[in-house]
Amino acid sequence: MGTVIQLKRRVDDCYNDLKSSVDQKISLVDEKIKSRLESDVDLIDQMVVHHLRSGGKKIRSLLTLGCSKLCGYSKGLRDVNLAACVELIHSATLLHDDVIDKSTIRRGKKTTNKIWGNQSSILVGDYLLSRCFEIMVEDNDHEVLKLLSSTSSKIAQGEV
Image: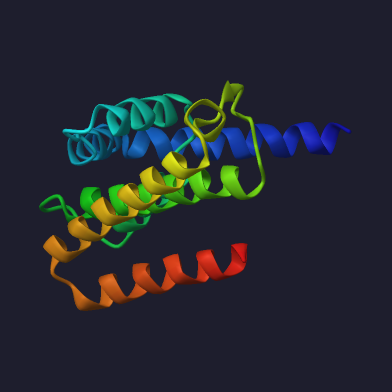
């Protein structure tokens, strides 16, 4: 039992170290996501705000930023943009997954599909993916676009 507790503490320490090492950048990721998801459609805004407020540790975007830092990237905001993409893909898959699994609770809150229905949840998940792909196109790196597109495709195939 003591080993499990020690391991949990170690994992928590590593997470906190990673988070503090990229803390300024993770705030920029949050801002990027928020600005890119703004919509003229009130329902989309409501659903996005609800989904994003449900929290999460943002492990994927933290790892993206951390790896970027380890590889020596320090100029520009490309790492922020790609971390936002990774987070948007993950969020979209959660919206889709909740519909597939008929989930009603995620992280202690009602899921978007429980509140607004399956159709709207799927479409908002698709909206997140489309915004992500817009950011990737702006990044203008064919290899990144290819990698993240392939990853999204594999995630979808895995759900089926």
